[in-house]
Amino acid sequence: MAPIRGSKKQLHTSNPAPNGPVILLAEDNPTNQEVIRRQLALLGYRCDIANDGVEAYEMLQKKSYPLLLTDCHMPRWDGYDLTEAIRSQEEKDGLPRLPIVAITANALHGETERCVADGMDDYLSKPVDMETLEQTLAMWINSPNSKHSKSSEAKETAAAAERSGREETGSAGDRENSSPVNDRMLKDLFGEDEETFKEVLNSFVGPSEEILEALHRALDERAAVEVKAQAHKLKSSSRSIGADQQADLCRDLEQAGADEDWESISRLAESISPAFRAVRSYITVL
Image (spheres, rainbow, N blue to C red):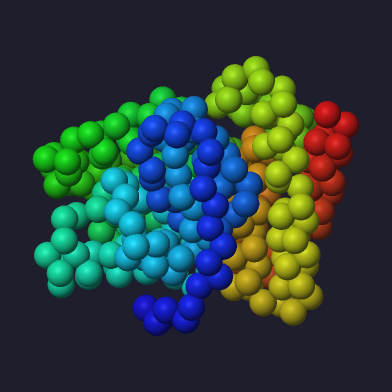
């Protein structure tokens, strides 16, 4: 695990639910930050947001939190590095165990098992429906005496959770005739509040354009590892707003990058920009 090299100190704190518990959220994607922050507020929680694992670890040195929600894939320290550092400090200093819940996009093979094997207590797949999020938070925040038994239960159900996450989305081709954005998904999360719906979607455009630019640079440089990383980022934010066709393309591109399969990378890359333009056009005319 790489040493801490300093932090950007770019923190955000949610304003709603002033009396609710404050959860620490480690998440580098601005769209996902906004979606999860709003979900937590609707459930009566506040959150402090760290943009990567290093920031989150530094924040934990200064403030106590009842629970950590962490993405698995972040710059500098990812969720696994962060968990390792927290568990090592707890063991060294005799600190109480902090509940750590992974919250990430539909995983590649084996990631759910890795989450619990590496010291996380539970696993949620983005986008997280409100009922599942509410039950998970209540379980880990309100039932401290049963943490270890629930961690064991999480290990037993990890494989089933991963299968369920993969089955929710078919191939990108299955969605060719569907809307570029599944508006029902966001409205199921936040209700029929059109203003919230538009704000969440608009928060997606700018950061995703930056990710797409980085993805094209990686393609030009034939850097498969970076293709995988940028495809994962765009997949995650796309899934969070219901842009399922684009998310499926990114998922397939992420896997192709992991396999260094340049034939598939080149084929899939041709569809990414048109898919993004369709999503952006949908959002622009709202």
